[in-house]
Length: 259
Image (cartoon, rainbow, N blue to C red; front, top):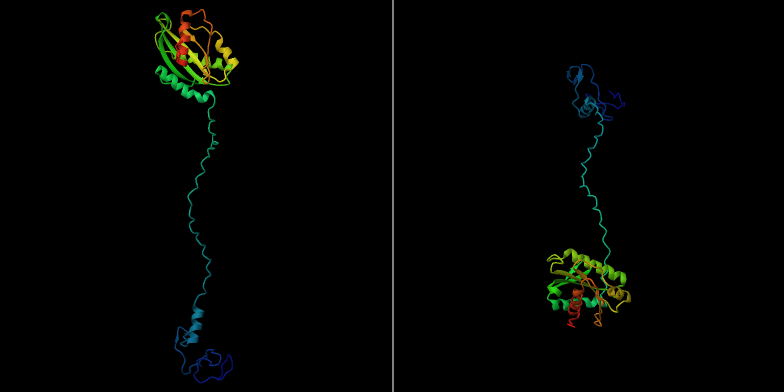
């Protein structure tokens, strides 16, 4: 008996070829015929069982690759929009040191303040410091005296005019007391410290000032280095009785002189 697959001789009752491993079909009715169940051979050898299992097992259905689920993207917190940049102002240069009459003004102002027992206050509208003194004038008139102080070594006619008008306007607006003309009056002294005295500024203080109702204006130039005091020399006709006392008050307050 020979293997129908490779032709190798077979032993009696062999179930598979020992050479090629092919199963051997038993002779009909022969001994050792395998039991039949439902007409299908049942293989008990390992090779047959492996072949039968491979035949009966359904071929695996190719599975489409699973679409990977993207990992959740971590949402970074929204970056806030940058705040608008406020331009940094350029460094301000320190104010130049005062010199000339401007450097002397503070100490001179303290001297005058102690002389009349008042505290100076700065008036922005006039750009000057103010000291107020009351005195009894001619004809028993209560005279309210407003002394304004500034320093400008280069001021001329125009600067003196602007300065004097600003002082007079502030004094008339802020005057406190009995109505002017009723035993009460106002004397305004726009004092400018200057060294040396400028001819144009000097020309301004020598002219007769404008006339005001019960209000007198006496612009003054004062040289703090020489003590020279300059103001109106003439005596206006209007308010004639008052001008002497007004000029005397300027000398007393600004220089400490009684003459």
